[in-house]
Length: 194
Ligand code: FAD
Image (tube, rainbow, N blue to C red; front, top):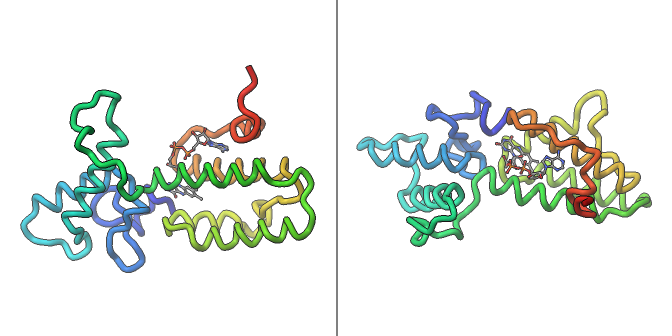
């Protein structure tokens, strides 16, 4: 069940993901799909009950999409606000930065209290992540019946690798290139070797 690919959770309009109450889920939808939805919604005279988005919300998200895809040229972005709510991608990038940074600063050897705290965080995180379809999939991945995806929290090396695998699971789901986990620490802790 991906925010992009799950038919049962997507609205009739391509790419749009609905919230559990049937309304469009902005934090589960990428900015381009949202923008195209709002263009359609504006051009239709009859409101669609499942895609009923306020014009203000629509234009602010469209502005976000424009800002994030704009080149370095100043053109229309000079009037485009950049302080708009995130879409699923902006939220994801910021969250991975937090999660990998938590792994990067995790103790080299973690005692049982440190492991318990991190396990608690990950359990709550997987329930509370604001993109609910992402959260559902993340929970399901962690709870794989074989137990193979349970957080490995004995040390920084273990946890960093586990986080990289978790991220790669999402990369695969979205058709993105997998990251070579041997380099997670250079990416997120030490910086790249020359
Ligand atoms: P990101 O995937 O955000 O990665 C940021 C940077 O991390 C990359 O530039 C790279 O340097 C580094 N990186 C990449 N892979 C790894 C790795 N394996 N280990 C270490 N570093 C790495 N989006 C959806 O559309 N559907 C979903 O179901 C979905 N689920 C998500 C679940 C979670 C828990 C999170 C945090 C995000 C989820 N996202 C989902 C968002 C998605 O993962 C991306 O963040 C988003 O698509 C933006 O991708 P990006 O290409 O900019 O780079």
